[in-house]
Length: 139
Image 1 (cartoon, rainbow, N blue to C red):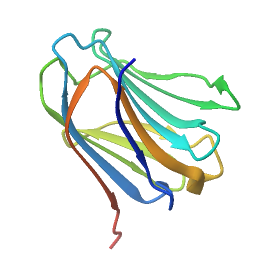
Image 2 (image 1 turned 90 degrees about the vertical axis):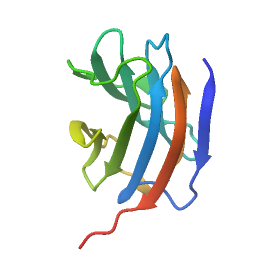
Image 3 (image 1 turned 135 degrees about the vertical axis):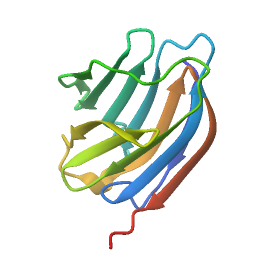
Image 4 (image 1 turned 120 degrees about the vertical axis):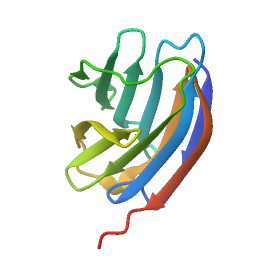
């Protein structure tokens, strides 16, 4: 498992923040992981796992050292060596995932302490060209 990106945001990433990631799966890409981690405990509040070779998206959480029930979307728009832009945002109830401007899935928060989600981790078969994290402005 190769660690590609690990960022800490002490003020918290949820709710109301947008993470925009540009990249492309590697030539031999099988899957990669995007994890939103809770401070101190290393719990995974949101685990987003595109499985390119299986053509599905898997979402989950790991709280109290136990994985929850997987939520699977039987469609993955990502392909090896094809650039993409992904946006992950959160509100009071869900994480929302958009790939190339199209909503691909949403995942209901499984932790009540949203402000404890302070870390972003990206692992495995992906080349990242940029990551932008910004507070979403509501009009």
